[in-house]
Image (tube, rainbow, N blue to C red):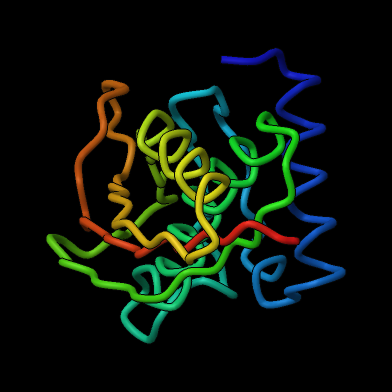
Length: 161
C-alpha cells in the first residue's frame, strides 16, 4: 500500500483522466485506496450522484467502480511494460449479492493475470481478451469487508503499431 501522498496523486490522476476523457467516471468521485503490481482497491462514496431511488448504490455507479479498479490496474501494468497497448472492456457481468447502503470498495486482485495478458498482447498482432474479476464490498464497523457484488469484466488488449 502506498503513502498518503502517493494515493492522493493516483486519485488525482484517475479523476483528471475522468474529467478530461470520461466525465461520467469523475461524477462518482472514485478514490484510490491501494494500487500495487497485484492489486487495486477503489472506493466510490455513497452520495447523491451514486444513489438509486432506494438509497443504495445505483448499479451504474457499481459498474463505474469496477471499471476504475480493473482499468487502473490494467493501465498500471501497461505503463510498467513500457509498451503501447490499447485497452477496452468488451463485456460486463454482475452478480448482486446485497444492497450496498454505504461507500463501496472495489477490489481487483488480477495483477499477475493482467501482466501475462499484456505480455501476450505484445507478442501477438491479435486482440487478447480475458475475464477480470472484481469484488464490490462495504466496510463493516469492525474493519472487515462484506461482499455486495461479484463483477466480471472482459479486458481486451491490443498492441499499438
